[in-house]
Length: 511
Image 1 (tube, rainbow, N blue to C red):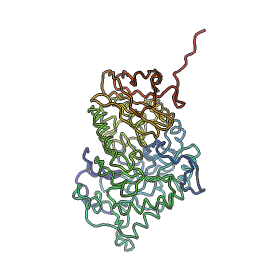
Image 2 (spheres, rainbow, N blue to C red; image 1 turned 180 degrees about the vertical axis):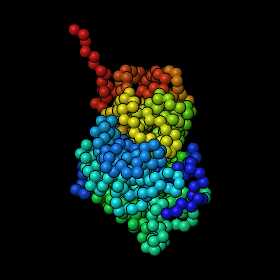
Image 3 (cartoon, rainbow, N blue to C red; image 1 turned 180 degrees about the horizontal axis):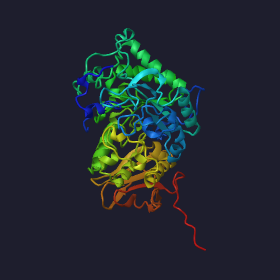
Image 4 (cartoon, rainbow, N blue to C red; image 1 turned 90 degrees about the vertical axis):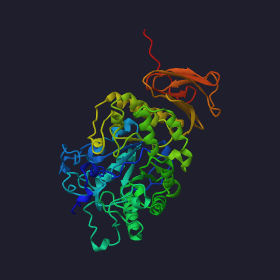
């Protein structure tokens, strides 16, 4: 398919399509999932999960036999990662403490570069053939093996699904696809919903989902793959570029064909909480990425803004049908990596990660964040995974994930603000059987605060609270807790009497 020059005003513009293809947004119990072998078992409460996003081509090369057209010196080319590479790292992910793996799209992508740009479909978002696994990644049997082995280790799999567009080389002019695509040219107004839904993302063939044949094709194709592979849910790409009427059908089918525990996690790239929330309220999505909170994380933790912004953002949770089902994140493949935005300051990453893994929702960790990988805009934010490059940072991430797993309050308890000022933010997490207090210092100096307990808090005076990161103890006195936080330090406190709490380390006495 020839590339019209109008599509490529600049390499920087086109490069933004090397994934989901969005223009920058203003800062603004028994599972019922299907498998080829039948029902699987596992938690149906997704709020207890932590998602890890592995972009296959950049994660790990486990099978050198499919390394054709690989050029690791080309940031926009194939680097050789594949399904076998992810299988080989399941033990790593299980040990890290994540519970769900979001896998980048598996279907056959364009096999030639985009014009003269040297950009290839390594990422999976330019689908050429919806009936087969991309040969760079593996085979259907290998994808089934991934899911089977992940489930055996207690890990769920989310498959990335693209319903907005086909790849550049899809045969759009074949008469059998007449009426399947919009022909309105590229999106002209990114603030106009009609253009978002009916215009093309940088020249990609834009499906006309209002055509019943197209809607049936997309729904049958992807739920056919869900049944064949046995995945636990979908991550849905470019949601705002597809009409809500289609998403209502799609999400109804997710429940009908996949069961009540089959997750649909949508990507609505916008910093407007009301705009994002409408897709949960009126398009049937169980979960959405918390892009509004992403922008707040960036402003507060990466850029050093006031912690009051966190309070302001959480105050908007009522806009959603269920904010506890949102998926917050610090970075992903479409935005610069957090550490680069933070000027390379690992202390900023640590306090931000502590917040991410102790707030409401289903947190998502981008591959490499656990070892402090840096990277600017696409494709620099998709560097090859640097296993073992920062063991202290990986261990810190593992500790946070273990703390979250120890506390039902941190996993799925309600979140109640305790304190906010420009430097410090604190909140109570509370479930029927557990409570936790989290306090975050976002400054380069120490901070001390006396935090009044919420009226809802069940901790009586004298309760000993254990900091899960330092093993220090502090007592509740006069319905208050006084904490000193070091520079950009997170304090995560669980009551010692709580069975979910971790007691202080007992050091062996010298004989």
